[in-house]
Every structure is written in C-alpha cells, then in structure tokens.
Length: 112
Length: 116
Image 1 (tube, rainbow over the protein chains, first blue to last red):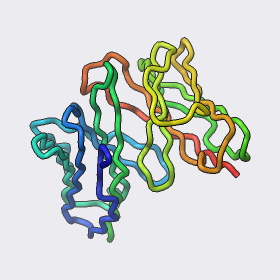
Image 2: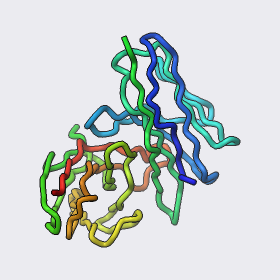
Image 3: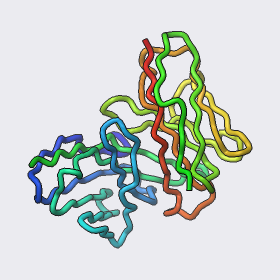
Image 4: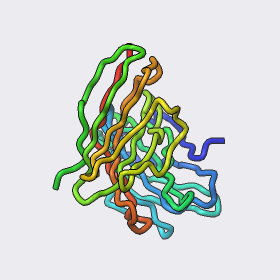
C-alpha cells in the first residue's frame, strides 16, 4: 500500500460547482499535512496547510481526520483558473528528520 | 525576496552521459531537497541536504549524488543516464530546524531533463 494515496481523476466539474478531494495516508505517525497545487508543466505551489481543527482560505477548505487517516480539500464556486493538479503532502518525523511524501495528485478540470 | 531558483530550465542528454543540475534556495532557507517527477506522477524524494551534508535519502541508486555549498545552494548529479531518468527535477527549500508547520517546502521551477 502506498504511503499517500489520491484518486488521480480527472474531476471534470462545471464552473460554480463545489468539488472535494480526499487523500489517505497509511502511517499513523504522520504529523503535518499540506495541499499543493501544480499547473501543467510548472512546479508545485503551496495551497494551504491542513490543521487538525480544519482551516479555510476563501473558497478553499481543508480538513484532517486523524482517526480515519485522511485529509480533504473542498473547493467552492469553482473557477476556470482552479484547473490544475492538486497534490497531497504528508510529513512525518523519521530518524529525527522530516520525511515528506507526495501523493500522485488529483487532476481537476473546471469546464465553462 | 528571491524565491527558489534552478538551472538550467531544460536539458537534453544521451544515455550514459552525466548531468549536473543546480539550485539556489529561498532567501533565509538552509535546507534543500531534490525530487524527481515523472509525467503523471507525484514528486519522488531523492535526497535532502542540510549543513552541507546529505541527511536523508529516498530510494534512488548511487548514480544520483549531490552536494550543498556553504551558501546553501545545491547541485544534483546524475551519472550514467538512463532513458528512465527523463523527468522534471524539482528542488525545494525549507528551514531545517523550523517548527513542524513551518517546515513547508517551497519549490523552484524545475529542470526538465530529456534523455535520448
């Protein structure tokens, strides 16, 4: 089983729709979680950190469920510019250092 | 505030050759991590440098080696290139001793390597 798993999609949604992605992780020692956005042929860019209490940034809401070992990203009122691949990142301490694991990404296509 | 920079942006090599990729971290960051991203995949961790030493390594062969300089910049070297080494190579910088949620990684634009 992969340490971090995401549905690769693609998720094709109309403008204005609400879409949600999940990401599951296998190691219960995982400590911090992030969502990155990656546009085609570009580098990943930090979208938001994911906190235990959940956090919101405009149209984006991230949630963490430690009991079920998954994080989620909700995008409301989708815009064409939201079309990208969304990468889930899970960090845990290993041997005193941070071990960073990326999911394979979920592709979102927002359609006019 | 300069972000993470990488050079070159694109590179074409042939099998068996050697390549060196370069990265300068974000201002104030002291840790550099290298990733390989194949088409349609998430970034795969190669190794991380802190205080001029490799302190973590992913599942990559010894053909992949690196270096960090006193100014925190870093190089990734790949020897005996294989066709399968064709990928986007990403450099990410962070703070080595930061609190948990500050260990956010910031990525450079990447070097796209094509091995023919």
